[in-house]
Length: 441
Image (cartoon, rainbow, N blue to C red; front, side):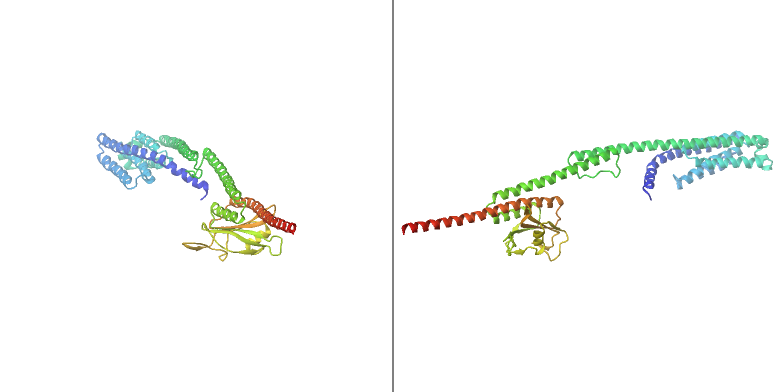
């Protein structure tokens, strides 16, 4: 079923209570008139001495009506039978009044009552029944039965028959048109009421949604499956605020992380081992990783150039490991040579496992970032976690890696200068001692 069909079905379901209200009110009116027709038949019995017809025929019509209403309430079949029974009383009055044409006013009353249903199809049974009655009586007007029980029919001429036929058809057509107009008006009124109710509902929905947004809840779902223009605007506003909040959160994550790492780099700029240990510890916590390690390039530019493990931490505990890797060996060595970040979400089962008191499990991702400053790689940092890192977290680690690399270069240079100064001081003391010895000699 298409979306249009679903909308039409939903509209019909919404309109159904309004139609049911019209039918209910019309059923009540029809019930009163049915009883009134039966009482009118009893009254005619006193004037025309037709008690059997009044009690038997009227009683059968009334009993049929209430039985159908009891077994098939609120059904179209019950209303079609009601339409037939209305003119059945007309036939009863025709028999009671000896064929007097005035009783055709009952047909007008019956159709007028049926107009309350606002359904032109319900006018057809009574109209067809009345036309058949008129045709049959005119056709058999010379029969003995008609002469005996319906003497007034004897005076019916062809012109009178045609006039009666035209009047019935004209009034039936008029009532049919009126019924259609009333049904259309009810339909339009129901549509307006539904639209107004929907607008009020959407207004309350939008107010509730706007209140949630104003309280800072940008993850709240729109309370309705359908939206209006205001609701769509609120959704767009929520999306814009959510994007702005996400950008702010990412910027805050990067700024705060750089500040924390920068403070560690300033505090431990004199000790490369302690610097790597503290930076690794902070990054494992800040990135919510389960394992982390920092490798440093040693003997750079020589045949024995390699990567040495400077710090390792898992589950917030320091790991005392001794490990060296050749450049190009494994993913860490590959990242050092290619100077590119490696991010894996499909980790081989034999690559690494994360152990805890509950057992061991493979990480969900591996992030390896070369520590480089102006394309000079001085080390590699590796993080492992169950939850994949986001793009802004990877970008942060690459950016902070440049600061770490720059500080490591400065620290190495300072340590190298310190060693050279100490060696120079030793040589100076030796030369001084030799000069003193020469002087004494």
